[in-house]
Image 1 (tube, rainbow, N blue to C red):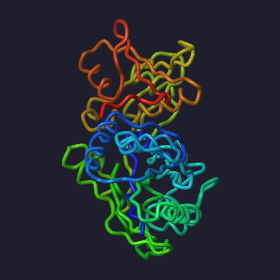
Image 2 (cartoon, rainbow, N blue to C red; image 1 turned 90 degrees about the horizontal axis):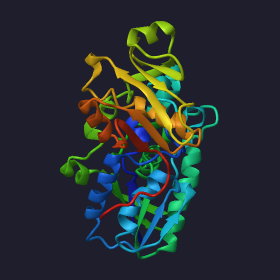
Image 3 (cartoon, helix red, strand yellow; image 1 turned 90 degrees about the vertical axis):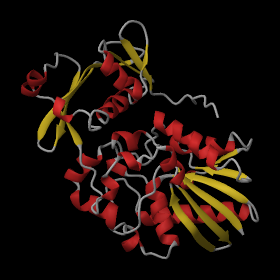
Length: 345
């Protein structure tokens, strides 16, 4: 028999910015790195013989919490990737809820029916994932291993291992970032001992789910912002200067903010020229997701740094909390590339 700890990745960009990141290779957030240290502490006294991970950045980075302190090798396994979301990749959950209401319901509640252009089906995920679990268990018979993976794929797998058909897997709960499930695998027999334990992050005050509400909704609808190209009326309303790519931030049926991107300002970094949210929307986490629009826009253009000018002290504190650090004068910068980040355990 092989003991398997199945662990979801730490908080990543898709979680923070409320964007569908299936196999889009998003980064771990600053809070995600804090979660890694808590996860490492949870496993300090647990013997682990081998570590496997999805090859996506957010999963293999989370795996560092176990394999680095224990001096183990990391084995990358693409079969443990998140579901590929096809044409949904990179779009906000609110946008997808509006554009694909039936498929969104299927994704959350009737996985046997989910399929959009270019996506995997839930059955295809199971067909690659469960055989890989059995294989790595057989390779480590009698040992204890850790496997790092992704929320939607794990929900499908854990629900199936608990005996549910895909038509009912949508009734099972989602797992928090770094939530731990325990499996015992003996040949083709897989027993779920427990699932989705996030107590280590709750006790540390670092639970992602504690900051969000979508997972409590029976429909599991995201709510929140979506984005449109900005017209001149909206630009005038929010005082957005001319030039660059101007994005209107919408909430329900009303524009509530603006983001201006200046792709021609510098060749070595992307620039946010203007970032605004209506005062009535502030202090409610609505100012965070628009950052994801800038990150994805410039990363797709091969840039690994994001800059802005911010002279106001209070606003500087907001951007600092989400990964921006001061440069010269009032310029702040955020690294959005894939260079491994040093972690002090």
